[in-house]
Length: 238
Length: 261
Picture 1 (cartoon, rainbow over the protein chains, first blue to last red):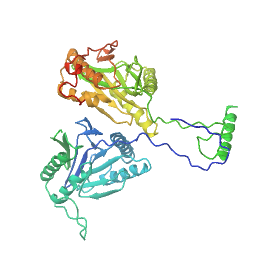
Picture 2: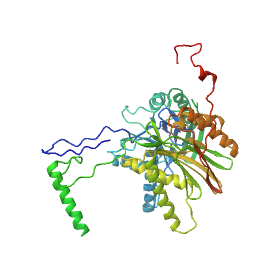
Picture 3: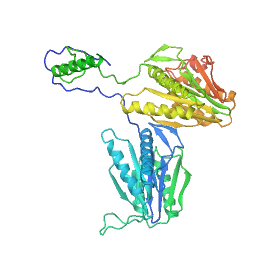
Picture 4: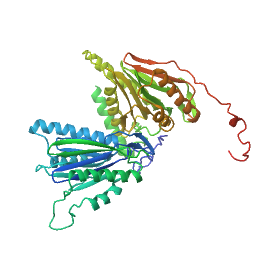
């Protein structure tokens, strides 16, 4: 990299140019996340593969992070940014608990996540998030984000490298009311918790067939009024 | 006096800017401005580092080459260094950045020791700290051009993990950096098991180092193995592996198949 100090005899109006960047501060470590909201439960699932380029780094990395009692964040994208984002939200939640003597509700955490992402609008967290949990009435809620914080509450969502393989299957199988129909109906799925978990397992098995970044295992977290429980199902390791 | 000097320098810089525009690379007649120095390419680099957990601890291996592009410029670079009592760091990538990181870790260990409260930093702590260092440098768009391997044992808990120059980090029972990801990690996945003895672990690492020497252009046949157990960190003297080049196929490679390579 040579720096030329040329004596400038005339006024220069050339703008500062940056050399072609030889590296990118981002990497995509792959993976897929799904969340489904039910009447009184929420299912959040993500595969456990961490990749870089065409290599698999590890097969047992959890993309799911429980931030509060009632909200669980699943993120795919660039792992370093995701981990920094999770720690950021944890710290903010701790402060909230000190100030309000209670945990944040899921809708409140949803807004905080959006604000946190937009705060880095001009050097984004490369994280594709799905936030799932129970709202203040105990009904399942799912919030889905882009990398800079645009978000929407819906009945179900998927993000990540396998998103386009999974989303149509969820549209077809969950029997949720369409968000386009008026009057607006609640978007939680009428399926039972068991049926929803079963569907999640099927969709991940299908995504793992065709998406090279999805596989190894799928970690499924279910929140309902009894609490939080985890399931782990193996997927193809190729 | 010093603040006056600073003020004068700032005035000079502003005047220089007004005359020359805001190009920081333009030559200022009044005072040269400092060019932006962000690492974009590495110069002296180390190649793969391999690590595995075994029954009594962690084994980490690396060769002692410092390449300067396609030249093997330095042949006695120690790429494995102990940190504190329980941890070892191995580095791939730009060696000058590794030396800076060692200084940073030195400061960390000394500051921690000065608390004088019998608390020592273990492998997970160093891993977390290094992760923050690497991620923060990346956030300034000026990365330390290294992939670092962390291994150690503390209070009976074995630990092994990696941190890349982007702040990507993970732990596993066996890890590799650089070319090792492509050539050694598959062998680990096939042949590693939890109860390997020191001999078995060493053999496995040597097998992978040999593959890397055969196939990685920047590797040399002079390596060190570090053994970290509850008792501490022991890094071997550099040694060479037995190689085999007298395969029949090498002596007359195109027999029966002239014209191909």
